[in-house]
Length: 440
Image 1 (cartoon, helix red, strand yellow):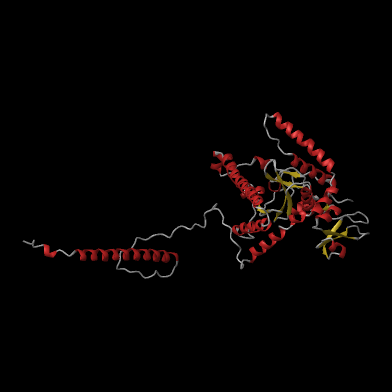
Image 2 (tube, rainbow, N blue to C red):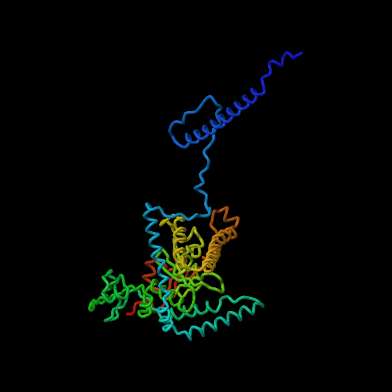
């Protein structure tokens, strides 16, 4: 006999159909909930009326908009091409590409051969050999297997630096009057003469004799050709860095020309012994003193870009160790755009290289990037280690022992010129090179 309630049961097909309908309704509810969440977020982010909702479905609880991630720092940058509408970035890009051509001019074999005829090679190599032996003896005295502070090729560049500063090149502020040798006063720029233009002078500075009975005018052409500078042997930091860098290339070193946005240039030489780039400033006879400009001269730096025949690198962190004290605003282009420009210049300089050379240079780039990051880490750790409980209570910044013993101020240039550039330093008064002053 059939059970009386059996007739009330729904067939299996109806049960499946009901399950499908319930699933679709559940999906619809979830979809509506997602749309309501989006509507809520949008309504909280603007002052307009909220978007209409389906009030027939359960409303989600009020949620706050997600936090902005634009304030997060130290996220690795991704190179980004400059926008064609960003004229400031495009001008900066064009300028850096133009500056990157400077080191390629020193790859001329004829120029380098001519440079070697000027350099007293026997004197340079004898001094380098003597210094390298002394450094090796000092290393040996510390124990077997100790490495000398600098290698032989480093000593060659150091000897070249001393000769260049002390015997070869001359600093020029205002050229003395050729008639009476009195000081001159700058009166502006003038058009290059045909012979000056033929030697590559794009601008000529004009000076007037300060002696009332003379009133003679002097011309000071600014040459960019290293071959011409071998003949004139005078100038300011641009000419010094140009000629000295070329001479370093002539004696077999890999060199960089470092451009600084605050109106200075210097050299970097690659030390095979140390496997890193070394700061060299011929104007100051400075070797491996990257903190000279900040701790010594008291300057703030924004961009320090190193150009070589192999590419370009933003090396600002080598020269600006304390961002709070010595970093100037970097507003010429977004950082991602600058990274893209560096990659562009490297690609141009390395396009015809072998795979082996490209791989070697990529390894150097990675080591240098690690070195530059290390300066930031060391600066932070150094500041933390100097903190004392009393400093935290009083809110006083920690003292920097290295800054207390600030490096010397600028030596190249006369005192008036140095003061005008605010590069006299913060320590004791700098010892002026008498050859930098005006002859009377």
